[in-house]
Image 1 (cartoon, rainbow, N blue to C red):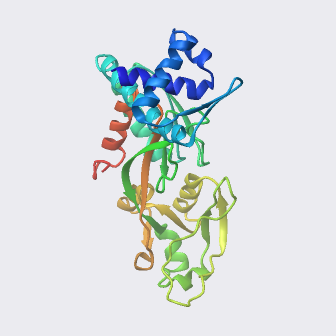
Image 2: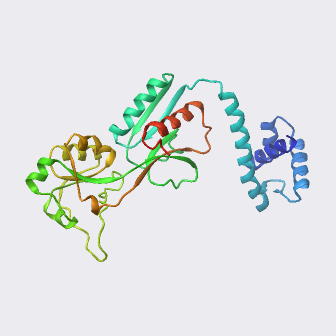
Image 3: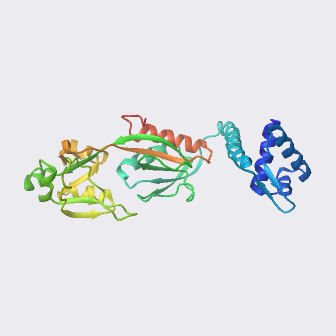
Length: 299
């Protein structure tokens, strides 16, 4: 515990660049801070700070030690927080960013609200890439492998992109047998809101083959708008299978070119690694993992 106290003082000095300010925050004198740092340096056998009459700066060894010390203190604080939080019922506000696939996420949100009436959900449904930390979100649901080292992540389940059309449309225009046949069809396309780029259709091409022509009938930043159009018989669309499954079972949509598609996507829930996993956040993450893709239990 004495070592933890020295580490806490060291981090305070490193962040304030002042023995006096660190002492004020720790509730001790600046001389006590100086003695604590001196004992720590003696124990480690390295100099942690360069000191002048005007400034206190970290040495290269001190900067390396600071990174480890912050993680140690964060773990201790998290452990204390979890013990205090364990007995409390989940409550409070959760700010969540979700993709605009209402049919997939909203039933799960509604179930969660029924299970945890003391938790208030603040939902931001958008397809833009939000900055989870800077914008103050408690968690986000996104596709694709997480790349932000500031975030914790848990996989929720897989999906596949499929090409579908209504039986009436296919009866009128014919069923495409190869990707090249799409040149004679009306294609309903989704475009990314942030970049304006069309979402690529994951068609398998033979080596050296040209990209198939996709005559566009509709372009929309809302994938649900594309879904409505394909159900209305306006053309062929590329949609995630969780959006088409029910309509396929009802005979309202039919898959085409399955043998010419190759795609697997994954949903993840992400949350700031620097933020304590409160009771409300833990039960939210567990609920998502259990209910978003129940066939795979989110794992």
